[in-house]
Length: 229
Image 1 (cartoon, rainbow, N blue to C red):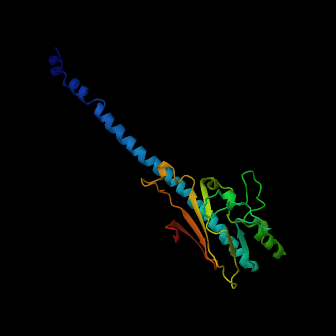
Image 2: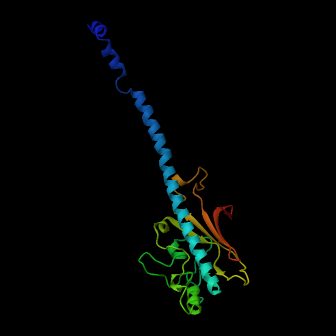
Image 3: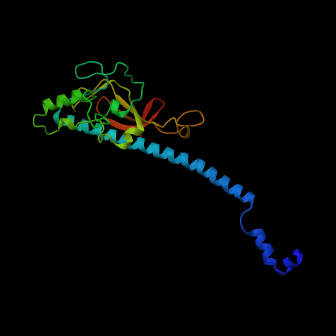
């Protein structure tokens, strides 16, 4: 009976063979989707994390350029002091140039609750500017290392200063004896999706270097060097 039906209706037999997917086809398709997802999601996470580091680096670099310009305008030096307050007392005895800190603990004045740190790194500089800038044209209170503080990128990065102190000196004066290098790294730099098989991070650690004569440039931190972009 089946043979006669198939002969009379050959389309029925063909439809049974070709309609839908076989189990093997479903397994292959599922495997391809899984492999694609396993590659694209970590790649998206890495790109997103790196973009936040890069944006914060530009924000910090812009703030440092602004400080240099303002100090040049009044021909005064500006000291950045990460470990001492204006009275010379230690802010944090455990401060180290080997440790990464949250930006709000090292380079930003604005805190999460909206208040400003009294012992921030630019406190001494702001006091000096306030004393010299009689007409208040430079608005000493607005001087900051990071051009725009409290951004979303702040929570996505950690920062490290390779120097305890640094002074911007106005043009025509004696250059600084030391340079200042600030490193900017993602808080997710060592997550499984961000690391290579050898344990190193796939994400780039950015750096900003300010030389003793006031030159500023940003780059990549590679082999203990800030290599300009």
